[in-house]
Length: 563
View 1 (cartoon, rainbow, N blue to C red):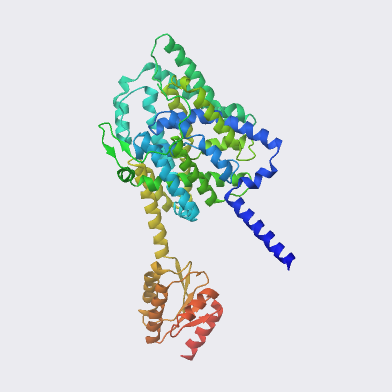
View 2: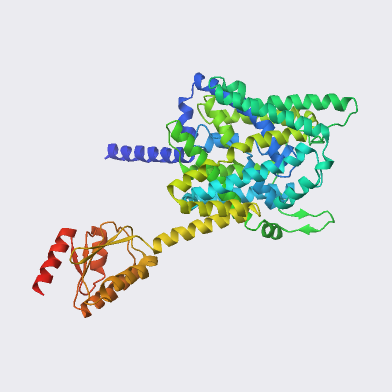
C-alpha cells in the first residue's frame, strides 16, 4: 500500500515538473548546459548585438520615434525569450514591419507607442493562454506576401527623403511620393553623397556575404562598421563647424527608467487624452499589430526549427512574445517581434540555446549606458541606407510567377493586400484577409461534384458537406436527376465526406422525400462510420446506404431490371 502511494506521489511530481517545463522551456536545456554551448552562445550574441544596435536605431526612425526608443525595444526580448522561448535561433526586437505598423497607429508619439506595446502584449498573452494560435492559420500566404512586399516598398521609399536630406515630407505614402519628387531641388549634397556611398558599401558587403559562406561573422556586422564610419565622418565635419549632414541630434542618455506605461496622454495645448480615447484612436491597429507580430515571429521560428531539425510550441511562442511586449512597455519599448535577419545571423554563427539573446541584450544595454552621446552624430542618410538594404530582400517579385503557375486565383488576395497597403497598412491586411476568406467560403459553398453516368447517376463529393454547400448540392441533384424526364436515381459517393451538419441533414430529408414521390432512389455509398452514425441517428425516412460504390451500383441495377 505504501509502495503504491509512493508511486502515485512520484507520478504527480513528474507530471508537475513536465507541466513546469512546458511553461518554462529553459528547464529542458539548462541542466545540460556546458562550456562549449557557452562559447557558441557568447559568439552568436556578440555578432547579433553588433547588428542589432544600428538596426534598432534605424527602425525607430521608421516608427517615427526618437532613436533611443529603438534600443529601449531591443533588449527585453533577449531576457524574456531565454526563459519562455522554444527556438534556439529566434531573436526578438524591433523590425521594419512592426515599426511601420506602429508609425501608422501612434503617429510618432512615444507615450502612445509604449502603451500600444502593453496592450499588444496583453492580447498576445491571452491568446496564448486560451490556445488561440490556430487563428493565425486564417491569414493566407498570399496575404502575408502582399503585405511584406508593400511594406518593403513603403519603408524603403520612406527613407529616400533622408538620403536626400529634405524636410517637411508627409507620412502618407502617396503624398510622400509626390512631395519627395517635388522637393528634390532642396536636396542637400552632403546627405546625398553620404547616403549613396553607404548604400554602395552595404550592397557590396551583401554580395560578399552571399558569396562567402564561411566567414559569416565578418559580414554579419557590416551595419555596425558602416555606421561607425559614418559617425566618424560626420564628427570630423561637425568639429570644424561644417554642418554638411543631417544628423540624428540630441538623444536621451542612459538606461530607460523601469515604470508602468502611461495610460493617458497630454497634447501640446495641455488637453488630457484619456485611456479610452487613446484605445479608440488605435482603432483596427490594436487587432492588426498583435496578429502580425505573432505571425511574423512564429513563421520565422518554424522556418529555422525545420532547417535545424527541432520542434517549437506555437502557443508557447505566443506567450514569449506577449510577455516580452508587456515587460517591454515598462522600459519604454514599442511592440516587437521576431526578426528574420537577426535570427539568420544567430543561426549562422552557431547559437546553441536561447541564452545567446542575453548577450545581445547586454550589448544593447551597454550601448545605452555609454554610447548615446556618440549617437548624436549618426547621419540620418546612413540610417536610411541601413533600412533600405534591410527591407530590399522582402520584395519577392518571383512569388507572383509561382502563384500564377500554381493557382492564379491566389493573386487576387495578393494584389488586394499589396495595393490597399499603400493606402493604409491595416486596410491592406484586413482587405486581403477578407478576400481570402471569401475565396475559402466560396470553395466551401461550391464544392467540386463530379457527375458520371453508370445507368444511374453517380455524384462524387470531393470534400466535407456543410451548410454552405447544401443549396448547391440540392440544385445539382434537382437539375440532373429530379427535373428530367423520366426522373433518375442517384448514387451519392460520400467516401471523401468526413463532416456533416444539421442543415445538410434537413436538406437530405427533403431530397429523400422528393425521390420517393418520383419513385426513384437516392443511395449513399462509401459512408464513413462517423457519418453513417449521424445519418442513422437522424432517422431519415427511406435512407439507403451501402459500404462501397460497387454494391450501390449493383443494387440499383437490380432495381432497374425489376422495374
